[in-house]
View 1 (tube, rainbow, N blue to C red):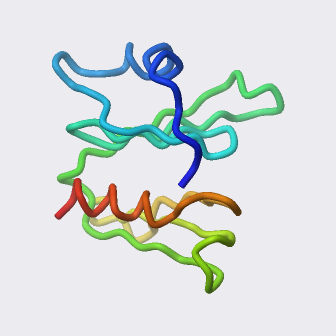
View 2 (view 1 turned 135 degrees about the horizontal axis):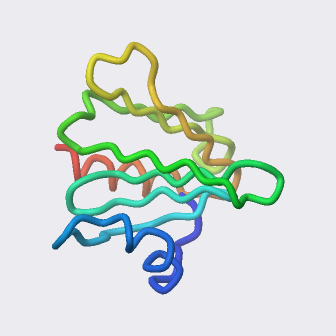
View 3 (view 1 turned 180 degrees about the vertical axis):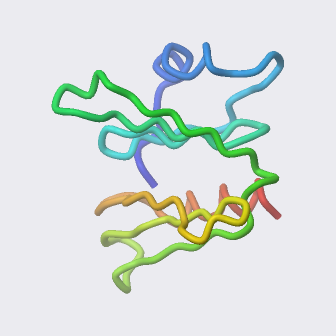
Length: 115
């Protein structure tokens, strides 16, 4: 997937958002965005704007994810997109992973948390 993120950076960005007793399992950098797995949910941190100072944080409890998919260009080392369907929403949450990311690692992490 993306590059692994140092625990200091994750603690600074995500730590204040965690529930009491919640712990971070894995975190990945996707260009400017973060994809964080905790023991309770997925947190997507989307940096917006030219400077990246504006941030959108989406929290998705594992129990609300109804299905997930991986879409590639035919080879796992090329551009790929991960899709998460939440609740009864007809449109998935989609994130572009980009070239050079190990998309199989992300898909496996999703499987480990959801199955």
